[in-house]
Length: 83
Picture 1 (spheres, rainbow, N blue to C red):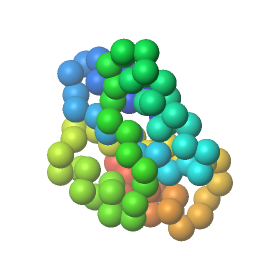
Picture 2: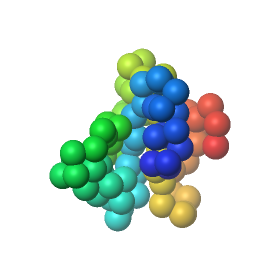
Picture 3: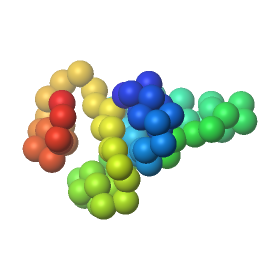
Picture 4: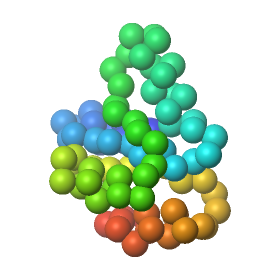
């Protein structure tokens, strides 16, 4: 998810990563990038309304999900343009 978002941002798109994985690896990646002085794509924790709000402000929203299907992931799939 992070690499996909980074590639899209490199083309000039505004990109947000929503981290819905309980391990918070995308948020950890962002923290490490900030500490290293690297450019950072915005990453936020998942909230039920997060994807719908973000679609209004970003060209691309990438949702980082854990490898299982539950209510949160089903909601992400329901609003996704591409899975």
